[in-house]
Image (cartoon, rainbow, N blue to C red):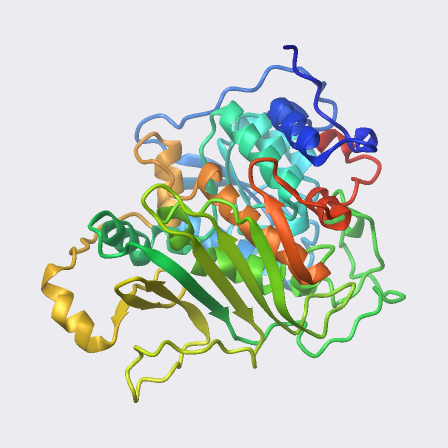
Length: 467
């Protein structure tokens, strides 16, 4: 059978979700086109740094979290910082990166950077707002660049599908920036699962009860706009999304609370809290997602607090699992009965994992698990697998993988499905109620509004080539 061509947004009318996903995946990286790059152009080969040589890296997004990554990668001693790209190069939050690397060429448009300097770098680190991850990452893979993308991987389910397909086709090294996936919790969870300490898990309760920037907001629109800061490329900041008036409630940093640009507390912290459970329990995609609680639901911004329930089917040798997510400062989950008296919940962010025989208490990022109660932990300590040290951190792991020395720990085929779970939860936060999802068809059952959100808005003029 001759495969149908991949879809553009203009082709979506009347096409089923199942056909859309199948054709999108079939097209894969063929959709990843930069300006002036024709469909069907051969995929650029992945670049590998010579043995012993530093990896040449370009950074897109160098303020706030991007600035942290510039310093983190530079501190590995394994990279050359060869280019910076940011739409707000004159802002205070990008100043430190510029001061640390004053001779690095600067760009405001990633497409110009690729066209002028693409031959000089091997890899790209993307630390921009969620809504712009997709076009940057897929254009980089199209040109044979290894890609490190901050979490969550993309803003829509469809974008994640296309990124996974492009990564598989391109052969480049990929890594999502959930840095705890190279921490102690990663190695502990892996070892405890392989040893049968973590088994027969039936329930996970994850929580993020720290305050968020949008808490206390009321939003019935984007406002009339504020004066645009000098030098800010506000059009470029929006990437493929429709342009709204400038507001300090959007940039810098506040974009995460808006459905149009971010993925809320779940997209931000879910990748740090449930990542190891999702991977080593092989959860895959849920068959139902339910918004059990939404405090202050809005058309524009995330709830002030929410409780979500995900139901995952049984896997070979593993029972079904229900996963609960709690966010909001007053939306604290119930504590397990096994938790020691006098040891109340003090952490704002973490998880409880319930199996048929044991209960585990964990934090976030690289925090290790404890068996509760502590008496049970002490009783079992001699038989628990010991976790050695000396592992590379997340940034070093990515660079070493680009050099062919290690395998990346959070590649897109691992971090993509995790991100998709988070994005399904975001849809439930937006719409409310209980949603039935078909993992095989990758579509919601009988819910047009939810399926529309899997795809997201059509790209604005000038950006359709990425989709």
